[in-house]
Amino acid sequence: MLSIALSELIQIFRNRLVLVTSLVMPVAVSTYFVYQHEVFADLASLGYIAAIVMFTVGAFGLYATTVTTLASRRQNLFLKRLRSTAESDTGIISGLLLPITVISLIQVVVILIVLSAVAGSPDNVLLLAVAVLAMVAMMLGLGLATAGLTNSPEHAQVTTLPVSLGVIAVASWVGIAGTEDLATLKRLLPGGAATELVVNAWNGGVALGDSLLLLAPTLSWVVVAVALAGRMFRWEPRR
Amino acid sequence: MSTTPVIEVENLNVRYGDFHAVKDLSFQVRRGELYALLGTNGAGKTSTLEVVEGHRPASSGTVRVFGQSPDDRGAVRPRMGIMLQESGFSPDLTVRESVRLIGRLTRRADDVGRVLDVAGLTRKAGTKVSQLSGGEKRRLDFATAIYGAPELVFLDEPTTGLDIQSRDALWASVDKLREEGSTIVLTTHYLEEAQQRADRIGLMHEGTFHREGTVVELTQTLPAVIRFALPDFAPAPPVRTTRAAGGALVVETFSLQQDLRVLLDWAHDHDVELRELQAGPTRLDDVFRAIGEN
Image (cartoon, rainbow over all chains, first blue to last red; front, side, top):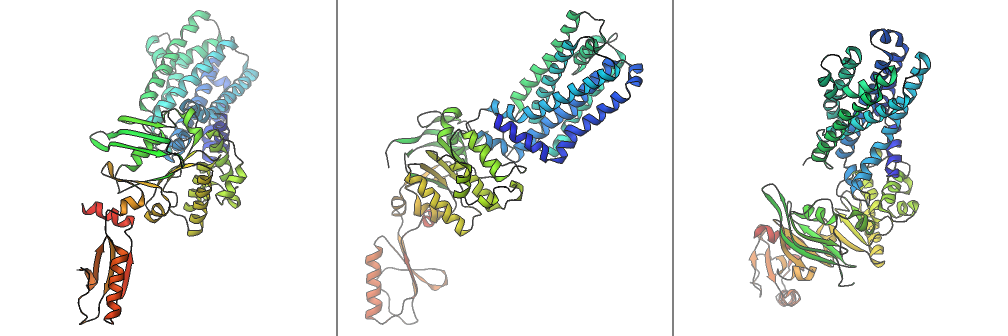
């Protein structure tokens, strides 16, 4: 698995398009939110900034790169090549997705550290970490499922849009409007509960038990996404 | 060569929806032999090979490789090398990185430099796969298949796109592997390669074996051919002939040497020139053509 991960890391840094879309773009957008933190804190809260930054990296870095990577490796038969070795399917997928997952996690952590340095620390760091990990698991699961519907890297530019824009929209809706109204709907939408969890972790003022309940919808999305991936994922191009 | 089977296929069936690609196919590949799986287009070779390699499940039937299911990658793959029909390498990795990656994943031990040397890719070691020619990609594929000298090697169209020197080098490497005891499963459209090198051939047509056996066993079922033309007003030859397109006379015979001698003696005695004389044993090409005619 680590051999595959190392080769994948090499490829990410050699492919300028992937490098820009998965690394530079999310960081640039996040930097804008941190730079304008007073404006967005007035509009919503610092917790909203943390959530939108997290989902920007998760959607445009982690999720989009996951789909593009798997579609690309399938299209040029690299997946079939890897399956001609002794490595297991789980090892292959883990190796392919480990670099972008680690990169995304580092990005989120660094950006949130910068946000806390310029705007103040989060109320519950541990809860924030749990929220970040839940978001990563959800976006990876959705990425695997979407890869099953994606024929090529070019096609990924279309197939990733609904989830990418959807979670950003949901994060903004929940982060700005809160969950006083339509709470159930907002929490069941992908990213809704995770956003509320991040807002609670950063802003404080909500009982820990109530916040932890918000993990259930997020982890349910992970289960649904992985189940969909199991049904839809293909190792070879359609003939 | 041992009679111990490395591959055992019994009543294999592969279906794609309503299409029955492989029908009740059974065969064995013995340890140390070069077994060629040949066939017409759409005969089911690739489907058969993919099941045996463990890339695709069988619809029904039993396949054992080294006595185990080919799906058991951890147990079977370290003992087999697979040269795929299509490249399947990442364009952004170099040749050396590609061989190192796939080599490590096979869990066999070898030296990347040695393997590149055997495949004739030493000078291309630092070149990205995207910059390789088609023939160089085939050699890269071959390099990953022979990494660690596996006991069983699948060669799917190994010489397609290779120049003659590269073909000779590849076959020399295969010969060396066989000397070390490796078993080879070959598919190719270059029938002369199969005719020269295969110990046994499975000839597929419409999802099952049309024939299976050694080259001699396959070719002896069809007559050899003597072809020649006669000058005007020449007497009738002493052997039975048919007239082919272009006016040439054709003798189909199961006693090539005897009939050829009769014909040459007759030509000498009558001072007749046998123009454009050709004589040769039955080739696999003829066996293939006979499939189409049947």
